[in-house]
Image: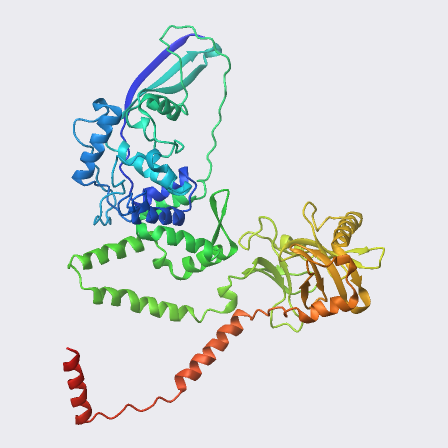
Length: 574
């Protein structure tokens, strides 16, 4: 296939600036798969100091910073190290200087860097934990690379003439001069040991190998084509955030400070607003509920520019350009009034219930809404004489999209599936912990079957399997007394349903007598009863109220003599 066009270009790739808090967290997430909070915790340890044999030594500078600048002493240290390790040809004529792009940057500290370039990660590895080494290695490489020459890459685009007037194109690139890439490639390379001088070029080629390499070609050449790969591209929605892209977006919008990014992400997960699925954040029903409520009722406070504008105002206060009292007054009074106004929202509106229509069987309204354990459908309301019926939404159904027909389908559960040979009624349903088959008073989870379509035969099979598993756990059964000896997760134990007692190690569980079992249960501690959160809080409020109403002793009346004694005591102490 003849080459009809061959375009070659040479481009330079500049080294990235040294780390600031946000970029350290992003690279820690990309390359090391560290949570942002874990990155900051390990960085804190490196900053506070690690014992290298003669006492603790701080290995990095302060890790909470917006500044990409380096002290003159640090630049000289890095350039001296590069010259001795990689040669003068890897040094630019003048130091590489970087500027902060964030308008709200606070540059009280310099960038994150090693306190001494001579402490190569591999040289002190024996004194570091695995995570400490990996993070220090990342910081060290980035700092060294930022003072090296740019990488030089050749990009090639080749067009081939095909039959019927078609043109086929191949593109690729090669690393001509690795420059800083012999030490570090941003967001691409895997962190490994510090490169030695002799194999630095090989490391750089590995980093650039992810780009397609093409053979030397010129116009008019005839190339043997092994295969033509047709590629069709479709417009796709942007991917969900991971920790690195979320931190980058927070920084771009000016939301929060670098020191708050880790706590923001921890709050999202601790309050169950979002979960990590395959390293991507997925909103939970609670998160969707909170987001929708705030978006509808507190629009100005969840606006992307709100935080940035407030940060600008606070910076103006710190510079003495604004008075802080009027600023906080302007924020607080409207916000307080809005909170009080929204407190009157009905429970149904607060839960964002959505009415879908009527149930044709009962004529009662059908709602969908979010609850503590996720989204659910509801037939009837709390004002009815009969208790409302509830059903959890399954699969991808959400209150915003579910239809009346889909919601009514959920109420086909629980389904009756007949009886076991022992006369136990079997039901298929969905509970808090997922689909299940109930037989008598016991349950068996459904994993690979649909509770809406599972047959009675399949349900009976699952029940029989569960019974066989339970029989393996049973060692002794004193049915008349309600006492059993079972194999448990932590060893054999005796139970009467209310209390559990471990079987002594010097006794064979299968040889225990009924009297011994009774004695073990009698001597076992009672199970702890966990108080409900609401009850605990209520009790705490009562206790606080009682304490606050207690009468205080009247203050002692001061006299001239008392005052004289105090002055004398103060003089004596002085």
